[in-house]
Length: 275
Length: 217
Image 1 (cartoon, one colour):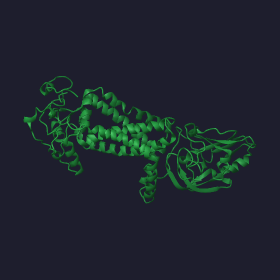
Image 2 (cartoon, rainbow over the protein chains, first blue to last red; image 1 turned 90 degrees about the vertical axis):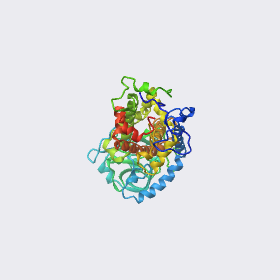
Image 3 (cartoon, rainbow over the protein chains, first blue to last red; image 1 turned 135 degrees about the vertical axis):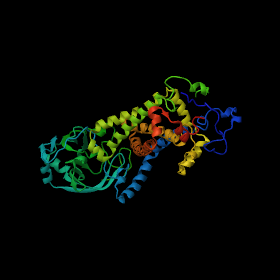
Image 4 (cartoon, rainbow over the protein chains, first blue to last red; image 1 turned 180 degrees about the vertical axis):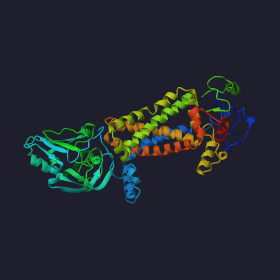
């Protein structure tokens, strides 16, 4: 190192009222003054530390104020994205639109040839449905908002499929049954509902979303749709419906999320209901 | 801070610290490796974040579990190079320089706001005012990302409400960091001699005088 700080004293006015130009006044006659020790780099106020601590403080404040900020931003961005031909707002946090999410390393693709949905557990008539079987059953179409527990909300999204209640009735639920466990062909995800929740008319085994067959990325060909609950309840890639005698918490519930995930009345959130 | 030393003595000290003829030493190997390691970890964080966040990339890349693990560990490791770098006296001295704002920094900032690009209007020591603000901000932002990231990672650490809030801050700050980083990289791309400083440790005296006129005074 031949560039130690304080190598030379021919600097600027350390506390002068006038900021100096780059060439700087040479004032060697004052270079013995004690406050002039050090290069220009070493003098001055410790503002860097304040910027650093200020950033940390703003981060903490952001976490504290997030619920309010988030609601405001969602409203604003929702309005903007309605008039955004570029679609760029869709990439912003809370900018609207669905986010791809999966907890599995990779998910196999299933189609009409190899998709199967099994209904078993505490039922009189266990049954396995193909995609064609499900499509042949009476369909229900619902248009509701989708609300994710992390904050994003997609307004007015149509889902269409078979009422879960119809499949349960067809299987003949035994009297000891209390709950349903859902499993998925990603091999990892699971979900649960109580029997009463599962029999609601706004709970579907969905085949279509946004009036299109559900694609693989959105959990197709068949996913669960639990309209009044946070979207993690609407398990993607649904492959198994098992009737159980008690609620078996699913993937996210093991990580602390509520089993009874009513939008606006669970998980510490106050979103507008979607049911 | 290092005590004042005789510049003549230091300038003629032989050994590996002596720069090649006609070059000015700007960064020590320890500082360069600190920057390299930090840049690499930040790059991994940004790339994995993009694969988790941008739907098209998420679908294309898949392997979500793996990508999440890489992102988490790269983020956790991100402050480590700087902490190790603290063992270097030169690095500590540069942190001191980054911390201190003198009157010339105000001149620099004013020129930057006026878009006045003439070097004569932008006096700077070893680091200019923009670099000082960037360094302090990115350090703070990294720790905010780390804190909010840990809240999202260890779900039992904090109440659920906080986790949602942490996600919100993590998302928006990630976007901000991405934009600021792009500016940082863009300025480096536009200044080959500044990159040479971090690659080789030395810069030309002309560059030093032009962009950091107060540095070697």
